[in-house]
Length: 396
Image (cartoon, rainbow, N blue to C red; front, top):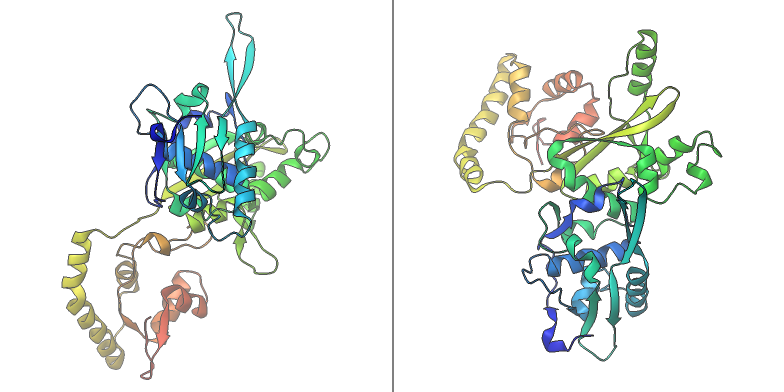
């Protein structure tokens, strides 16, 4: 191990600093790497610390101990020292495997450990980690990479969620990504599982879709499959629903968690070949993280106009005049959302922009609900309306 004065020291935890994850790690036909949730978090922390280094010699990394606990999400864990020790062993043993070919075309798999040594002492300030030079190209001076941040991935609780999140970030600009189910099983090392082996379980791929991806077929998909079969054509892609927890009745699983906790929305559709599902198409979109300064200024200047609009709506109600509901809906969904306010649009269709703060009477809400194919209560909840003493509904 290096002396402490030659370490790349990481003194403070930074939840906003970008982690660069190499796109090469998600070439499914060439690369395999699997970790536990804590293993992924440790690798992400290491990558964050060395990805911008320009030197050819890969330095050892020294994490200030309490900062490393935060990077792993263990700062409030009573067993954090043992969990950290176990994670260091895991990352030191689990190999990055990648395929190459000989001159004769034969495929060869090679494997390298991520780290070669570590030093964890209870009475020392730093946890010292020696990175394997063989994996340098996957951690430093990257040309193609996805950017992720601890404030998002620390909210992901399963191994699948942590593996898939950088995968989706790599391809989010493409908005769609098609991949074979078999390639995903290979990458996730599930080919030997009887549960997901079509030779041992006739519903293996359906179980993979529900257990690993977290999606379930819905009536729209079934209807499209029947129509496509009758018309002898390929079925159109329709997003499947998320798996629903039986107790809470809320969406759960890999895609639902990534959508709920991170900066992207992800849904998926399964593609049939013959009678079996063979491919997945993922649909990805970025959330709007912040409202621009110009937008804030514009909102400030519109406050009075919006108040006046609310008054005019009340006046129209009293006079019995009807409004053009389409223009109301356009106004209602015309401002920008925050990242936290956007669930995945596949299972809850949210407006692209934040609703203006109008007052609505019950008739208007019922008409909007009918246009949106919702119940009255669903529309009230969707718009976050409160019922005031004058009989109107207003924005919460």
